[in-house]
Image (cartoon, rainbow, N blue to C red; front, side, top):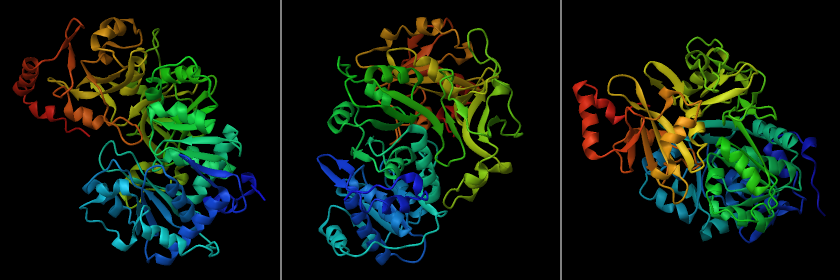
Length: 560
């Protein structure tokens, strides 16, 4: 017998969603050539929940997970929901002392990992009792789960407002913060997501984004669990593996965060790319011109939005949204001057569509109504206070608002440049540069000027078999009427690989630290706006300019 209780009739919590499927024989998880029904999923979640409850100590009931996108990750999520534990998603790109710090900072009682990540843990002094460091590839793991077989599901009355997830922010600057998310909040997100996107049990969701990231949980796993839909796991994202997987498993939904659409579009185009079952690609931070290209090539709809892991702000695109805008914010969403907490001026654009009052219009995206929905960071009072100053939820991101109320993304709060006394944000420049059909990704950031303020530097990832000369970059820049003279990059670096987080966000901190004295080729814009390859001799001349002005220390790029 198969039963799938409609999610709208269930109080929104992950525990309730999981337990509602105990008699559901529909497929829940597909991984490679294996699959599990919801009934089987609930049973094994119950076994692990009983094991965790049996072995837990006093103190925070936190379960660290260092796994790829494999079924055991989803099993741990389900088990923790049943048992009232919290799952700490550990980022495998954090290594050595950084990884040990994350495990200790989040007070993990348990650590669940696999053979592939043992090397990451080797030699570390971990805060987790060795007896509670569980490797899913061992006989001991299988025996421990088997010992719980046949036992009834735990019946735990849990506080739905307590932490269920500790989600580390990407950490593109400094140590990441562990944002808290309760079962009640995640359950509410899942139900709202399904209502807005028409998700039901017929959906087959492709999950290749890392499960330690909020996007994979809030825009894929939790909504599909609420709907009783199927989740297809891929261990790690692969641009070349994307379309074969979509076709093989008949996926009609996928989530993304960062640059995956760009990477997929960089694969060789085939005449039959549109012949696939994909209907919706949902995510955030897609390059504007890639959205239409992806929709046309793969015959699907891309729904790009803006939201924060911490909650508090959500901005959705509408049919009327200008192509370079994020969309319309939920009630209370504003752009404020972070020093005065007053609304910034309405954005004004010149005849070429260029923002003409950045000093007055660009501020921090915030929400004056949703601070109560912010559930905080684990053991970080300073960050909690910074995020909620004056009873306002602050996103930490720059933006501006046009006369029609559409919000534009200006970059992270460290993406602010000051050139010749004029302030402007990096994101609009990146949008302009990636109009070039031969440029896949552009990262724009500030590097120091020898006299005062900043120069603009751009690191570019080009399409395959394209060189700098192929770009005809001077002509391209000249043709962009909305690219201001001060926004024109002074330095252009061409790289074969951007430094990224595991969720495909570019780590600009690393690029700034390397500056123009790096291993990749860099071109310097001369006074006549032509670009010349920067050699060792010219680098030394630039350094000398800083030295005679007592500013050489700035070349170390210690800015946050």
